Figure 1 (cartoon, rainbow, N blue to C red):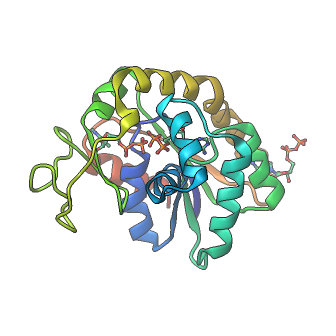
Figure 2 (cartoon, rainbow, N blue to C red):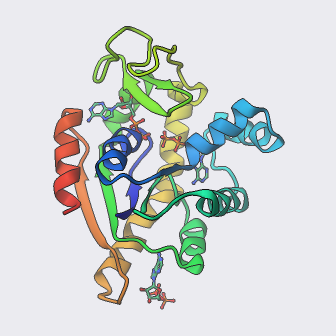
Length: 217
Ligand code: ADP
Ligand code: ADP
Ligand code: ADP
């Protein structure tokens, strides 16, 4: 299974990625998680990326494309892979195309803007694994603590309301165009074209998971 998850920030890509990667036993390639790991490691790249991320903007295409290429080289892709949060621009999608990265499914998770701020403000993350919770909609078993490791959960610096609104604008201006880009490719009937599936991301996490699994068969 080789797939791309598309959707606004907060649509539930990371949440669903966790289900999908387990079901198909594939690596999750999340550029957001990779950038946060670089920040935590205190690398030069991480330092530069943090400023951009906290401003709600996109990290430069060159940096992102370089990171993903490195990651693909060192990852076991025997069963496929799942891209989460990448590509986010036409330049990134074209770079994937030029590298010959094959895709079976493009899965769009659709959530209206009105629901996004509430989702992001309640988001809590286990930094080391990328597991994500919500204080109200998807709470951990014990308040503030990761279910699996028992380690503390954190709130992301870029989940403040004003930054979320900026990120939503960036999504509409730079990323949403990819819905049409991949729809067009899927409908081309060309050899190697992926299947395009759109599901609603509204409703309980398990309901969205079931819709995702159905869409991917
Ligand atoms: P979310 O899960 O809310 O969509 P991500 O974790 O995917 O957020 O991304 C957080 C931030 O990291 C983005 O706002 C952006 O600054 C940066 N980022 C992540 N992936 C990319 C990408 N593919 N291209 C550019 N910037 C990215
Ligand atoms: P153009 O727009 O340059 O005429 P297309 O974008 O329609 O060409 O696609 C040309 C070839 O690239 C086709 O074989 C198509 O299957 C493939 N292709 C299109 N989009 C992608 C993509 N995002 N990733 C990988 N291959 C793609
Ligand atoms: P993305 O990766 O697209 O930014 P996340 O998976 O991190 O989105 O989800 C954003 C927030 O919304 C998290 O706090 C998550 O627990 C919560 N969430 C995810 N799916 C749902 C859902 N179906 N209903 C309500 N909240 C959800």
